[in-house]
Length: 338
Image (cartoon, rainbow, N blue to C red; front, side, top):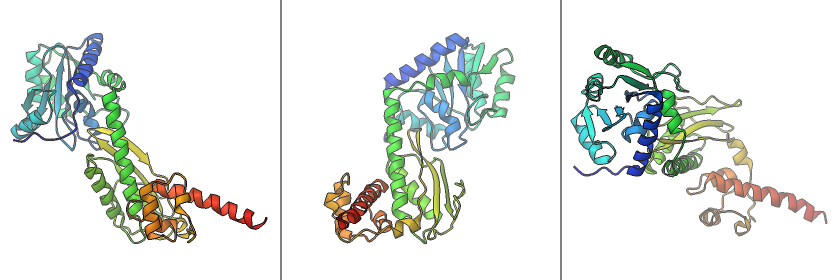
């Protein structure tokens, strides 16, 4: 099988994380940490497991056992995922099958390391899941099989470690921000009267994947008017109309790291009504990208609404152009009055 090409962290990053987690485990008196599968909230409820193992994303079911000493164990569904993840990452070598019964391999591993006090990641206290994200049936199976083991919540322990970002992590967050920025550029490019909401969302998701982002990410979207529409999770087939407002909250995800942009609301009628004089000298527009300048000269749009729909023209380009038009518009009456 060919090695999958996905973004991964270095072994130095692995050692940094495991060392800091184990320091906190010693302080808390834990012999091991366990993290059980949960792909809820666009994979975000599985982020702690992915942080420990570098395995997860796009609805991958994975659990983990991090002992105070010894190998970290990852638990996936079956043999095909063991083979795939063994090639895709080099952090964890002990990858075990669950066959959709995740309690048994966790029990086996905890017995092997003779754990007496175990921290449960995600048992309670997450910001977006204060009641916890641990599968109750799996947890009860583990507790019943290990009646002498003391289980305690370890959510804060992991969150404390995760709060300190490395240079490698920051680089991935910046990549995620770049991805969502390009997805919003695509949204503005395709936002035309008559286009359906689900078509716009499809274009954004396509751009996210093309930029190496993960498709299982949060897209909230709403259009309408005259009041600001609610951004919803459900994709509708409503067609955009003149005067519509768009309200969207979209996340870009790269290797599990998320960047979010709450897009400013754009009014189609205002874009259409903002005319670009035929005499506009695009060479004189300060801050305009060369690519945008060349395309504007070539296509000579009559309004900002037409300009934003030119392939390769971004919202930032239109903003620069709008500022230029406002400035030249203010100067023209003053010159005429002299």
